[in-house]
Image 1 (tube, rainbow, N blue to C red):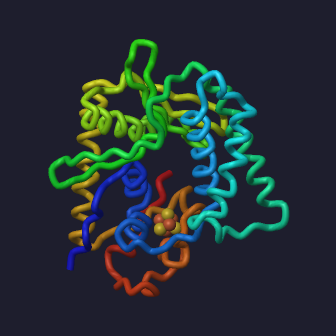
Image 2 (cartoon, protein in one colour):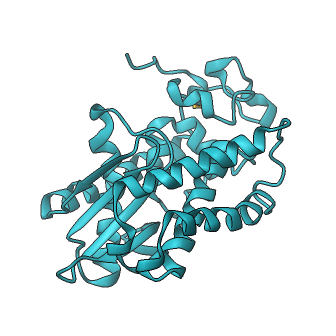
Length: 276
Ligand code: SF4
C-alpha cells in the first residue's frame, strides 16, 4: 500500500529528503514527534529577536542595544512557549545558551547596517502550486533596495556550508526567489544568506537559469518523493546529520529498530553507503 504524499514541499523538506530519505519519512510523512532541539530553539530565538528589531524599530533605532532588548523579550516567548518549554537545562546552561544567541545577534551587525535596510515584510509565508505539487516557504525578510528592487534575506544560525555545499544551500534561497516571483509578480534582484555564526554573507542574483534550475530540481525531488511513497522505500543515509537526528532509536543504519513503530523489513531498512 502506497504511503500518503506530503501536502507540500518547502526548502527544509527538500533538504531533508536529500540528506536522508528515512528521516524525511519519519518526520514529514509519519509525523513522529521529535524532542525539542536546542539547535532549533536557538534558531527560532535569534530569528524572532531579529524580526522584532527589523519590523518594530525605525531604521535609525536599530542599534545593538535595541537588538539585545529584543532578544531579552524573545527569550521567555520562545523558551517558555509550547514548542521548547520541555527542553532540559543543566544548571547555568540556559544562561550560556542565551549568551551565545546574543553573540549571533551581535554578529548580525558585522554583516550589514540595519539602519540602511528598507524592510517591507518579515516572516512572510508564501505558497504556490506547480501541478500536483504545492511549494511553500517562509521568507525571513523582504526588503527594497535603493532602486526599489526586491531583496530576499535568509538568516542562518548554524555553521556556513563549505564551498562544495554552498550552491546546494543557495538552492533554498532560489526557491524563495521563485516564490516571490510567482506570488508578487516580481523577481527579486538579489537574495542573500546571512550566516550569523562566522559571520558570513552569501549573496546571489536570481536569473532565468537559476529559477529554471530550481524548478527542475524541485520537480525531480517531488517525483522521487512520489516514487518513494509508492514503493514505501525511504532509505537511511548515514552522515554528519545523524548527530542531530531525533530517530536514532528507530534507524537501522545506526543500530535502531524500525519495527518498534510497526515498519516491516524490506528495502526501506537497507542502509546506503556513507558518501566519502
Ligand atoms: S540516524 Fe542518520 S541515517 Fe538514520 S534516520 Fe537519522 S539521519 Fe538518517
